[in-house]
Length: 152
Image (tube, rainbow, N blue to C red; front, side):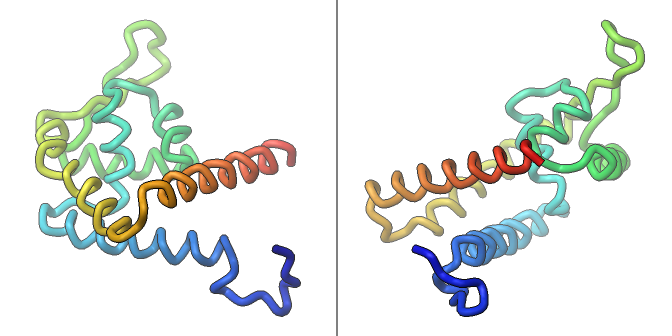
């Protein structure tokens, strides 16, 4: 579908629909995390660390698609809140390994189910085949945009 930007109906814009959906995911997640006193920005880092603990700040930045200086700021806050610990890398003393604290590890059992809940709520009434197509299209769009960013 080709629509001129001046006449673009937001309802027909992939960017608009993806952003609207993301904002709603985000607001619902924020409300669930607030019940546990956890900031929304921490979620993305916790998710990465629950999958692979003891990684570098750069790895976390890459996995969350967030600039390293923003990641550093968030990690400082997470450390102050007792969620992560910075440990000097044994192999390369210039680097630090970011590890979950006991509290950070314990939160996995308290919070991870929210991801499933929100996904279930978001996909309620959507046929499984349609959902598979949607996920494949979104993945392809992300790859297209990633390739464009890499070529700039």
